[in-house]
Length: 260
Picture 1: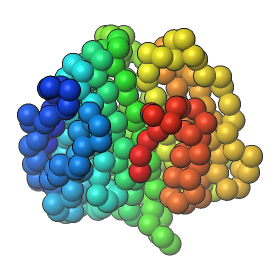
Picture 2 (picture 1 turned 180 degrees about the horizontal axis):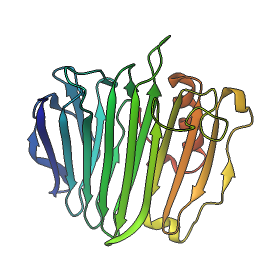
Picture 3 (picture 1 turned 90 degrees about the vertical axis):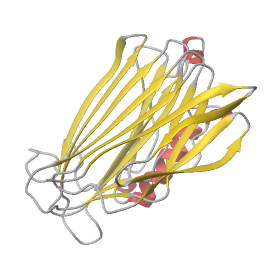
Picture 4 (picture 1 turned 45 degrees about the vertical axis):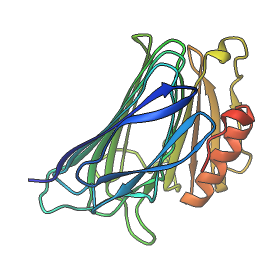
């Protein structure tokens, strides 16, 4: 048996600012309030123990109520490790963003260590006027070691309709993940999802955002809705973050730029 934990954050608009009526850590997740920026409340996820390990069932729920602005980051990378059992671990993130609210989910990367087995999901429900910046990065193996197995699923609904449904599977047991058709020699991958009603009036165009495949690649893909998906891969985590930041700076206003 692994750890069972559900941590919750709720942000609410009040008197021209965003407050945090719910800030409940659990299991390996501890929350720390950071200094606010303007009307935006900021929260850092701090790891209280090693997780996820095999057999763990972990979940974070974050809600931005009407008019609220919430930014969530993490103090360090999430390290998926082999656990005391052969069972896989799960790490589920549920985000809800109400009318005229904004949520930025910008944690440090997930590192899939050798022998680990993780299933990670993001389930996101957006109101029609909600805004979202979601960044996720995966590092397949620590320096000098093979990766573990990580399977991910991202489901985004806007106004009750599916905006994006995506699955990925990397590491041992995932056919073809290290072939030229998927990652090739690269061992990090990530993406930034931007959802903004302003894109209805100012849609982005598809772009290839990098010129050197050996150092990493990124593409910008408009979605069928006011949303843009930036997808990147690179040989290592440092170059991946550089590519994602550079790609993001070309696709969003400075006021919406993801903060490190």
